Length: 493
Image 1 (cartoon, rainbow, N blue to C red):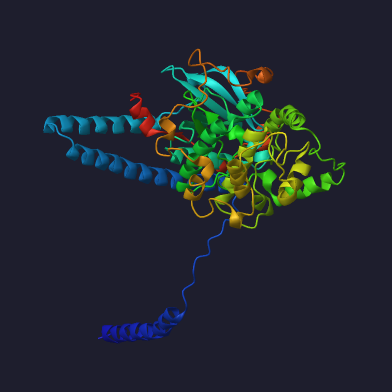
Image 2: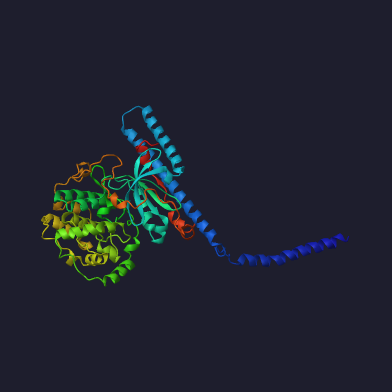
């Protein structure tokens, strides 16, 4: 009898409770969603740096893995297409497919191995730049000869050269052109970046010009035609070189040219920023303003040769071959490389660049005032066709030959008789005489005696604490590279 009131009370209480909670539930449902605010506030800097490094490495590894899968599929598709066109047994075709599969597997294993400085033995130092050296090295396992370019990370960071070195590595890795220096491997350690490239024993065009002073027009025509084809190849890759000069035009064992040093192909070098040239112009106010145009051609050549090698080793470099629109930073295209071609052609025929001077301040001023300062020497006559081509290259960008397409330059009368399709297979007017695969006689190595043959691995003072940390080392993520086609073509795998 008493249980019924209790039961009624319990039921009523339950109903009341449900009724009272209904408005609260409706109120909660009507409230807007509150998004979770993501913030790194409160995290130590070291944790943020490690997180950023992990994120970049994951993104890079995924990108590389995806690209490698695409390349593997493309290589198999290319082979299958070629086998369809060949006459042979099915068994022979299957063996070629199996061989490709083995090479792909071995290449994947090689990708997981780590190259290091100890894998190469220095033969000789053959070059020096503002931020590193170039050494002739021999691989410890295969005995093959390479040119190894080393760049100190601390200098790259200190002098804001990150875009410079990364651009060079990316362009060399993407290119497979016979006109571009071949990159085989790239790797890094805590102190240095390393580029392992093909060794071109003929030296560079600058060394040839210093040795011979001037070239005849047929020799100049040959080298200018090859540079035209090399720049055409670079432009087809979607790049602008921006730093074409004799130092960056290398000579292979057969006397043909290849382009190198693509550091300015994406992003500006720090010394090409407007602030840099503002400082140059401030310094120029203290110069006497003496022009070198009153010197004879032989005196000009002697003065230029005296200063040229020192400029190549300096951090400032030489602006003699750079188009004026690059200094103005108002936008430009591939036509800026054709200006450089014109200045190099002038130097080949006359013995010095058209705007050379005793200091970079005056050179910059001459380039910006090229209409008044482009003067051909009377005591060094050249043909009308040669002068016309130079004037149509060293001019305003909107009128420059090549601005529409490279065929404009190829069709110029100066290049009459050039067979553009077979030029690289034709004999060169200059073939370097070599005594061995390690012959460095075409490089000015006597000027590099002070450079140690072995790479210095001693940490510079303050380097560990100031420059090597997770945040700054992010700039070098993804620097490692190994070229598949080289390894398979040379039967290394």
